[in-house]
Amino acid sequence: MDVKIIQKEIQLQSRGWVPTFHDISTDVMKIVEESGIKNGTCAIVSHHTTCSVMIQECSHDFDTFDLEYLQHDLLDIMRGLIPDYVNEGDYRHPGPVHAQFGRYVDEPGNFTSMNTDGHLRSVFFGRSETMTIKDGKLDGGEFAHIYFIDWDHVRARPRQVNITIIGTEEDVGCRKYNDGKVVNTLRKFTPEDKAYMEQYDEWRKR
Image (tube, rainbow, N blue to C red; front, side, top):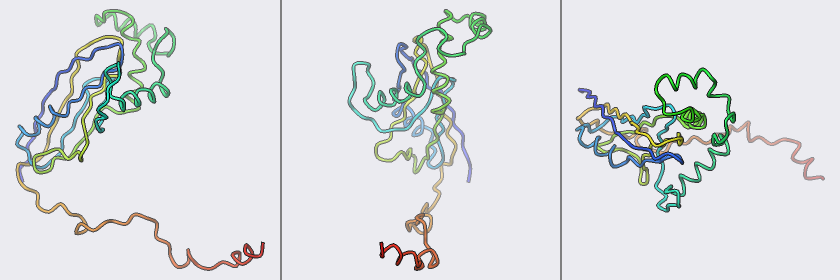
């Protein structure tokens, strides 16, 4: 069975002022379709240290920040764990050396290094997701969407998502494990676990 590898880069533009959630589902599905790979895996990876990838359903309703309700709920939770960088000194990072490094690499201002919240949220949330390709389509269930999240909201900027597809153009045969029977993972009690104990009678006397 021959294995094929496809790599593509998706270019995005984040808006700044609040974290940006990009729905890249259609683009990733198009890349998978054009790859010709029928069965394999698709890795969706952020090129940046302040960005994440998540797979979640679309919640349809949008608020005035142009965020889906579920996205804003997630942002509220992350702000509770990792507050927005609002005032200088809210976090240890960036220190004076890092601030000077930002100027050395021609950052437009010291404020662009005040994105510690974005770095920490990316660490907590992760920077990638991997999905299964079955019969030429992403196996995301009925409601899955693929979102690229830019937590860094100090400015508008271009962003990049890396897509790597590995798989085969051939069929893989039956996928059923255990002949398709449900695997029972519930705890199984032995007869000893269920044996009578004298304390039961003591309890009834109370």
